[in-house]
Amino acid sequence: MKILILGIGNILFGDEGVGPHLANLIEEKYRFLSDEHSVEIVDGGTLAQRLIPIITDYDRVLIIDCVKVDGAEIGDVYCFDFSDMPEYVGWNGSAHEVEMLQTLQMIEMMGDLPPVKIVGVVPYVIEEKSTFEMTQRVIDASITMEKIIIDYIASFDITVDIVSPELKISDLADKTYLKGVEYDIGI
Image 1 (cartoon, rainbow, N blue to C red):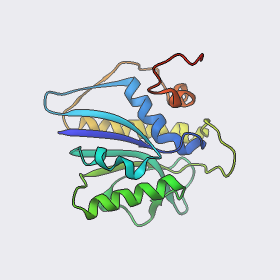
Image 2: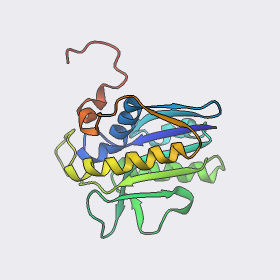
Image 3: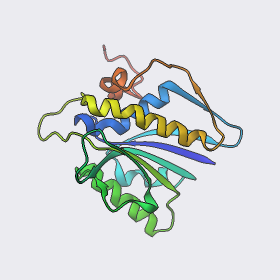
């Protein structure tokens, strides 16, 4: 079975970048070992519909993103299957979030959507300024999200090795934009 961990979000808007940041953390902190299954991690950023060929190539997909829940507090974590999305949960409402919801719905309508699990957190939504910094509540919530993700992967009898046990999301959040950069840019 091919499993995809897909981080969704805009790293320029603080908490809304938690998906890519957490995906980056998991890729740096863990190794997944199995003779039967593979786990791949992708920073999907704000690509939405451009992710369709990637999503449909997997047997299971776990999406890390922000969610909107009326009456919830910043940092509240939710985990659910897309096929059974609670009515009280919605995507956060920024451009990438709405497009991701529509992307999953389109793939589902075509009959190509693999089982999708969503691990989401309620963010602090900034209005104008760009920042790589996340609020402490979402940083704290990322620990819960990380545990949910690792437990989900381990549920498939995949061995999870921790290669960098002390690594935290705050160690990587301001460097996520460098992921994949193969040249020295003087940083």
